[in-house]
Length: 353
Image (tube, helix red, strand yellow):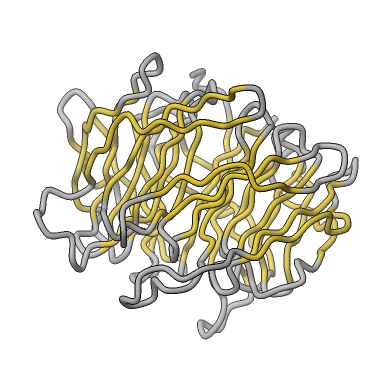
């Protein structure tokens, strides 16, 4: 990675009850020193998740009223485009298809999947389909009704995967790219009370990675499409905790490094960041780092684009903490003081002109 390349980082936050209206913060990334410098703040309520279009021109955010779109300027600052309703309770995750034709959101509170048309300028159009997950899971705790926690479109643009934390499964839908309509295609059944939370596809799309909140594990699935029939074969499970009983530990983050060589996760309770080396050929994971992040509830964690620094978003201690990462030594070492950031949720790096 060339030293002269410039990046910004977008961090989303909740705003309720903290006396701030700024749900998205924009930081200039100091790649050499592994730090952030605040550049801008955006007024938006309870930005629970953000994502950038594949053409890198638009940022989308969940908000109380539905979803909002922002044009990304040359210097990385954001310009409001529009907002749209998702016809339901506030969402918790969003994803775009590979051609930026549709925006998909999902809801933890109402168990709903929503598909919206995207316009040429990146703004959000009308709803093209809605799916409510149905059923009863285990009777214990919250896991007895649908909670759709994450939605991902396969890299071949054929299917939509919706992780249901309440039902311990991933619903798979085919998507019609002409109409934006979904149709039931498959179900990935997960362990009882494992709570599938977030998902990522490998760069080539051949492998699906699912992190389980309660099981504190990551499972790897080999994905193939057989003439319109998706198949997900589990090939590996690794654990984010060394404790034999994961009670009181909850896993959340799941993000690839920019080059897809590493997969980053995190665990609340133990408050660790976990980094795995990815074998791109086999899809298998090898744990390299599992160390404390000097904060409470690391809701998201990510490697800088240089793979030499790591940032943790500590939701309950209202902070960002920074580390130097050494994969040969298997260490992350605190890198300067924390930065105050109220209730941070997720982070996205973006290369600027």
